Amino acid sequence: MTIPPEAPLPPTPEPPTPVSEARTRPSGEQLRNLSGLRRTTHASPEGRHIAGVAGGIARHSDVDPLLVRVLLVVAVFFGGAGGIVYVAAWVLVPEEGAEDGMIPVGPPARNLLLWIAGGIASISLLGDAFGDTSVPWFWLAVLGVVALWYANRGKWGRKRGKAPMPSASSPVDPSENVPAGQTRYLPAPWAPGSYDPNAPLTPTGRRRPPLLFGRAIAVAALVVGVLGLLDVADWAPVPTSAYPAALLAVFGGFLVLGAFWGRAGGLIFLGLMALVALPLTMIDPSTLETGSSVEIHPRSVAALESSYVVDAGAIVVDMSAIDPATLDGRDLDITSSFGEITVIVPDDATVAVEAKVGGLGEAQVFDETRSDIGGFALTRTHVADEEGSEPGLADDADLRVSATADVGAINVYEESDPRAARFMATTERSTP
Image (cartoon, rainbow, N blue to C red; front, side, top):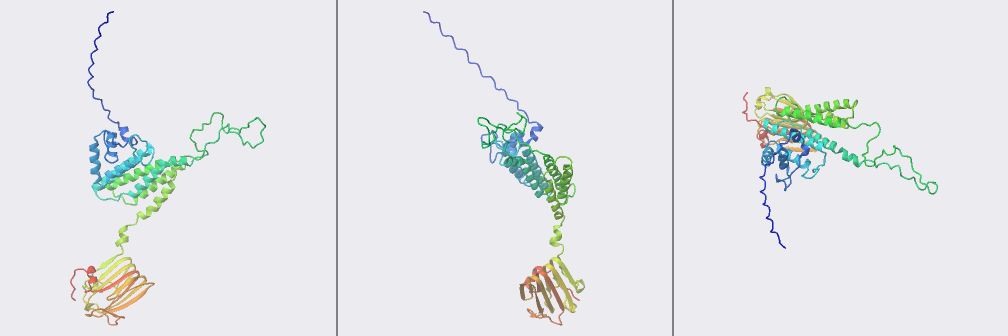
């Protein structure tokens, strides 16, 4: 028997030359759909340093992750824009392989909230570049919370949903009188074969869904964003009251539309909030702080009024530069409803002071101090060129001061009193 020789092995084929895979750039629609963002993990090619936000943005935009990280860090120092974007993506964007982020919202709501966060970051960035502006952060936060609630309303509604109705084959109560060997069934409230126990429940009756609520929130966010952009870019002066007024107009318009088409949902409550905020934003804080305050430093008797009245605020009357010889028994009345009264008199003048506190307050008249609740009066007289004071009112005083405060403090100091130094002007005494 002859054994044939072994056949030679076939030659090993050479591996094909690797061909570079053509990368497809994301389309504009894909870039605008921020719901497709996913935060990277440590195993991702883009890497992860903190929360994977920069890597996810780089992969979504098809750019270098290092560039995104540098831009986010630099933007933090310009109005905190980088921090706003990073925190918003951290809590809203899910990790790679997950469907929900730290705050579970649906893809459409996530896309809307991320674009709102980007708009806020842009306004903050522009505000830092063009100067400090009155950006309505409170209203933007309110819109964000409302949008978040609107995005989760379906999940909360499912928790409150009713159990499905029983099937048509459900037997009646066995305690009923049913002939032996027979089973009695209730008639089905629907056509046979039309009931699907796994189908989601739909509301019955004439109640229509809140079709306009989401649209109203989107329009309100757009209007507030445009006003903020006009303000920070200094294209037009935008007062603070313009923001609640614009929201009130938007919500009112959608409420009118809701009477004819769909329902506007909870816009009545939001409209009431804007209505309450409108008069509050029209108040000028500067008038509350310094509008009724008075500070005078007369150098002659002619420049001194006979009375001064303030409703709320501080009043300072510095008479240290007036020559006592020109006072000639002058009367000075000072009245304040709420605030502080400070009077400075020359050392070489005889001054009689009557300090009256109507409710709660304190009076410091020369070297005498008194404080009480329920009202009191303190009378003191400073004699020219003498230290301290004596009780009562002198009849031959060069100056008679009557200071009245309902609630507050009354301070009357001599020119040489160290407590008067911070109220005095650096002026020399006039000569007659």
